[in-house]
Image (cartoon, rainbow, N blue to C red):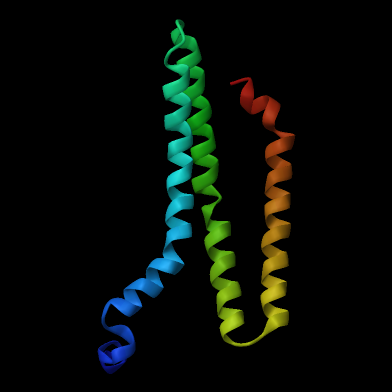
Length: 121
């Protein structure tokens, strides 16, 4: 195992560049959700009443919680599809993709179904 990481394929700036090309979209996606709340707060903060700012803070908190709680779906589906692709099993990759999509549609339906009780809190 140690010799794998000592090989020339894992050393130098070339591998760092490959990792960066794979990682930057995920880094951007993870930064975008907190930035959404930050921009909303900056815009609404100029209004005269503090109730607008409180509502914006609650909405940003709600969106962040949903995003991070449902992050398991994104990460588990990505891992399972990547494993299936590595095994050269296209049918298994498509099956995992459809399972993730079905679960996300079911969870989104529950969120839409119960949105009015959540907003009345």
